[in-house]
Image (cartoon, rainbow, N blue to C red; front, side):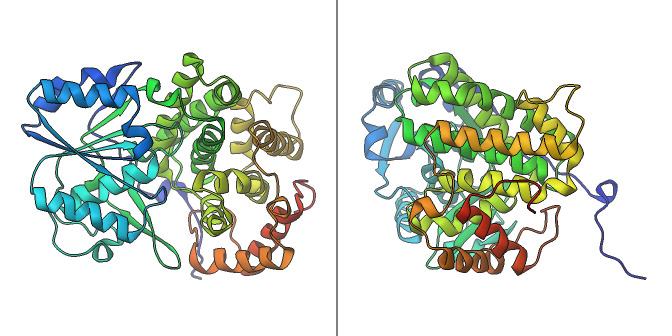
Length: 398
């Protein structure tokens, strides 16, 4: 009899990471020797208008010039990268022919830098490389500098671009950066709202990759530490942005959670793609969906739920009921959403119940997650969206 089943001991695990990560307060201004080792004169920087005017970035560009480099800045006008904007930067890089590609910004900026670095050395348009490991040639030297603590793009092998009717994803080892530079000073001026939803994006990465059937010991270790750091530091970073200790810890959590993406995200990320047309940036959409996705998968991940509860400081010897433990986890994640002013259900976003059902159908049809541990039908996903609409987070009501 031919049965479909999941056996983790039959699965090959691959753990991808950048060649080098430099982490610390003020490190951006002290990487000149690292750049010199790449033997390139030009530094092609992609960022946005706001980040380009910040003092750390202006000082860094000045340091580049005074050390013999030729920085050229490309300003991205769109927060969510579209094919049009990505192609503009690709054309910019291809005309230069060589140089170091440097993305300074949030996930969308870094994803544009990643795509441009490989398309500079591979012929054809972006669409040719959509999918897994379709890029043939190594890209131009790539440096990524996050200015938020959440997306994890600086350590992931994925780049996500907005298509006409769905997300377009390139996944390849060849877009991992040569160097990821994480400087908490770049995040201290981030306003509360993006601090909240990028922080919850990092929590989604860490939690979903534990849930994933592709989770392994390296993913688990990074994810649990990330969850612990976010649980303790996100509220502080949200309400006291210039608290450098909280920003430092959130940056560390985001980096660890980004490395955890080796395990692959599950349904919260799928749901986030369907919510973007309703004014929910990626991290915000992940945050809204996350407690419901934890609830959905709780029956098939009792052991993992206990470990997540411990990382959230919720578990002790007195809690020995799996359902009670799962409920504490779901409630704490929802509480973190409330603390950083994230909507707790779809109804509060002025989405009708009927539209929520339609979004469930879209999620099922466009953004399947074979690594989700609980198998599901279209009806299951529609019910999940109905619960996201009503705010039903009670574990007993599966």
